[in-house]
Each structure stands twice: as C-alpha cells, then as structure tokens.
Image 1 (cartoon, rainbow, N blue to C red):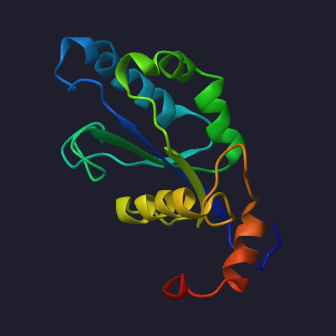
Image 2: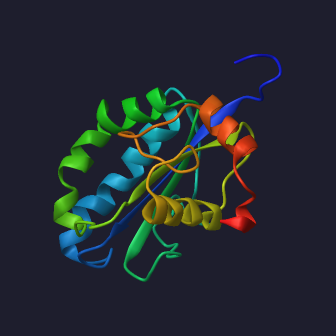
Length: 167
C-alpha cells in the first residue's frame, strides 16, 4: 500500500438457512457454540468487527434475508486473517457440522468485498454485494475465497466502473 492509497479492510457476509428454529433441540449444539466461536473471532488476529443485534451478543435474531436465514457479517484486516480464523481455528469444527443445522445452498452464500478501513458495512450493503455476486459472478466488487481480488484491484475497478446507477 502506498501513502496515497487508503487502508482497506475485507468485509464478509455469509448467510445460512436453518433446518430448524434456533430454539429447537436439534439446533441446540449450534446455539451452544455461538458464544465461544464469537469470542474466538473477537480475539482472532486481524479481526476488526462483527454485526450484533442491539441488546444481544450475536446477530442470529436479525433476519434481513428471510425468516429462516441467519446472517454473519464481519470485517477483517486481510483475507489471510479471515481464512485463518475460518479454517485454522475451532471454527472449523462448526463448519464441518454445518449440514446438521443448515440447508445446502444452491447459490452463493458467502461474499467478500473490500471497504475503506474504518467503514462498517450495513446489512443492506452486504446483501447487495451478495446479490451482485449471484447475478454477475465474482468481480472486484463481490468475490469469494476461490475467486478473490486484491484491495488495489477493487479500487481500480471502482475508478473504472460505470456508476452503480448504471448497473
């Protein structure tokens, strides 16, 4: 990063469709893991921020993507920090068990995008990025781990892309 380029952070949204309500005994193991996994994320190297519902310790009560869909919206200093937490920590055990609690998605359920450091993405912004990925595939505007872009590529895309209104 040069002095003329603002610092960027990586925003991440994933959505999951519950097989059963959160208060169902079949979902209890997932609910029991929420606090420890969120605490681990909060303490992970490179973690910046996560969405929580006002008055709650997590975002599971928010349902902006549908009655049975929970959202996870976080910000990280880098893709490596997010990758390490997701796949090289206790979070991996949750990932391995996700089919017990969540339906298999037939379309993209995870989206990544670059934001200016200090910006906290809104749920609306995050869902718009997911919709963009689903409609247009990966781009510097909305991508995945498998098809990632650097912050510099995203910044260049913003400078060269037509306005969002023209999309």
